[in-house]
Image 1 (cartoon, rainbow, N blue to C red):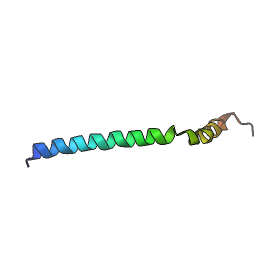
Image 2 (cartoon, helix red, strand yellow):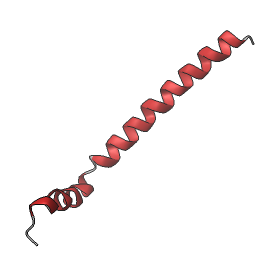
Image 3 (cartoon, rainbow, N blue to C red):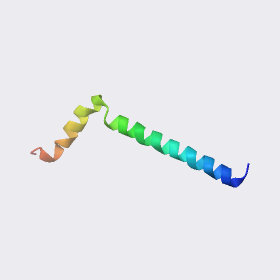
Image 4 (cartoon, rainbow, N blue to C red):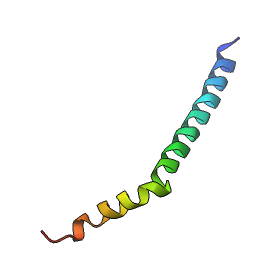
Length: 49
């Protein structure tokens, strides 16, 4: 196995890992059960103290 082939394999693997990580974070952020928590935190600047 030469270095060029190894480099291409690692680039492909890195792309797959990056896409999977992005999709996992997006799914976590937009999961329906988290909506109430996000709505509560979004109101913090508007709350009177």
